[in-house]
Image 1 (cartoon, protein in one colour):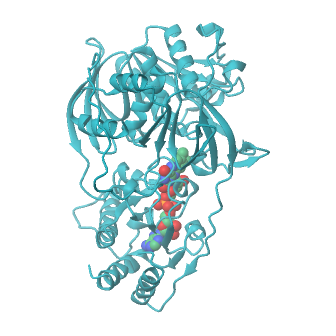
Image 2 (cartoon, chains in turn purple, yellow):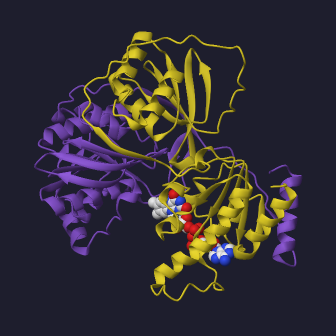
Image 3 (cartoon, protein in one colour):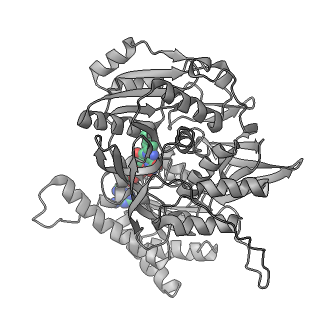
Amino acid sequence: MNIVVCVKQTPDTAATVTVEGGKVSWGDAPLVINPWDEFAAEQALRTKEAYGGKVIALSVGPDAAREAVKHALAMGCDEAVLVSDPGLLAADSLVVSKALAAAIEKIGGIDLAFFGRQAVDSDTGVTPVQVARRLGWPALTLVAAVTALDPAGKTISVDRALDEGRQQVKSPLPAVVSVTKEICEPRYPSFMGIRKASKATIPVWSAADIGMASIPPAALSWLEVFAPPKIETKVEMITGDSAEAVAAKLAARLLEEKVL
Amino acid sequence: MVRQLGQRGKSSLQDVRPPKDWASKLLRDAGAEVLFLPTTGRTRELAAAVAVDLETGVVPDLVGFEVKDGKVVGTRPIYAGKVMEKVVVGAKPQIFLIRSRVFLKPEAQAGKTGTVKKVDAAVGEVKTEVLGYKAAEAGVSLTDAAVIVSGGRGVSNNPKLAPPADITDEHQKEIWKAQQGFALIRELATVLKAAVGASRAAVDAGYVPYANQVGQTGKVVSPDVYIACGVSGAIQHLAGMRTSKTIVAINKDPEAPIFKVSRFGVVGDLFEVVPALTKELKTKMGR
Ligand SMILES: Cc1cc2nc3c(=O)[nH]c(=O)nc-3n(C[C@H](O)[C@H](O)[C@H](O)COP(=O)(O)OP(=O)(O)OC[C@H]3O[C@@H](n4cnc5c(N)ncnc54)[C@H](O)[C@@H]3O)c2cc1C
């Protein structure tokens, strides 16, 4: 099994994110691997551990954005590639998916490409399907469990957690799989893993390296970012001598204010 | 067109034919300028593929829009709602996925009909095979719910409860306690015709399935009323529910951050307050 796991670097989910001078700022909060991608990396590693092969962590991002890739290496990925190009800095998912697909084709011989279901910064969740569409591979999204994998017959069966219910799907390989957090519990990088990752040289591919000499324009343009309207709430504490008294008062207030 | 795609989306849950190929063709042939769909896992997927076919952009989780110079300008939350962005799609069709419960449902207007165009929905090559499908447990869906009652880690914290003697494992004891706690949450939810939500701590500890998780890495909800029981109000939980119209918090810790976003707060033991509230509302609302 030759496996790619696509990872993105994002601000920590606990970061205070604000708008400063018309730009998004997360102050000095740490940049981390997109939390969803940790599940993807874990599932990639488990697949490799069960069936052999290797796992390559792949990211498209600015050159400074190596933490995500390093984290994946520290978890145990064998290799990593960063696709970085000034022309890709304003990319949207349409363009990023093209770069990821091109990089996966350049790596070659890949059976499975794992993704987290979405990135916690832009929250769009369309990239995995777009990469699959570009590669002409099936896209298995929102995968909560891999139920069967047949490396010889080149098939995979998965459970998908859709809003409406659970769907069991069988697909030929190669395929794109995007995972939800039900799939597994990501491991913490080991001490050895962290050391190995800090010493690793991560090849950086430019757009030209992956055959994207001319980068198509993004379909999206961002007009502005702004702080969400402040939700002013003043909490009214409900007190009383007993739980019953409190409940009666709360129920009365909820009905009075036509909340219920 | 939206209606046809929507209907197709639903019916294909149990069959294998992906609507992507013909959806792209249909939109291209029609010269569609804008495509609106709801935001669900499946529409995200459909829109993503169509956007590649037609080299256009997708804007999920739309919470507002205006039309400027013949273009739709969409507003959507990013960074889990900590920041909003305004975005334009330069190509055609401009694809927007609308977040549920953001726009009012229009009243059905009797006698008003659109024209339904029949198209030949030729199915392209299909590589995947659906082996089975199990509909989600019937109940109120979290993202559509007008009222949500949520439980957190506090739901397992009732020292007065004694698990049956045959449960010896500590974690199993905790889960047993949590199940008694969630039964109380469910009773309140039933009276209010509400959906049941949970914090990640409650999901990770195995109290309830992941499908119930509210928050940054769960479902983003915006009900009229959100009643948080034994939920501390971590930033990642707030990311999934802070746009709820009215938040009610029941927590025994007066310093819990959930009170900062709440309209009504009760400092108390949820094992006493929740059943009392259920009883009270049942009588007062005649349910
Ligand atoms: C990348 C990432 C993503 C995350 N995504 C999510 C997410 O999507 N959703 C989410 O919820 N969290 C998420 N979290 C986790 C989040 O940080 C918190 O750990 C979690 O929300 C805490 O859940 P809780 O409030 O139930 O538990 P706790 O923080 O332990 O709070 C329990 C509360 O119950 C109260 N309590 C205890 N006993 C009682 C009682 N008998 N009566 C009344 N009150 C009682 C306590 O006072 C306390 O306030 C995420 C974290 C990370 C790092």
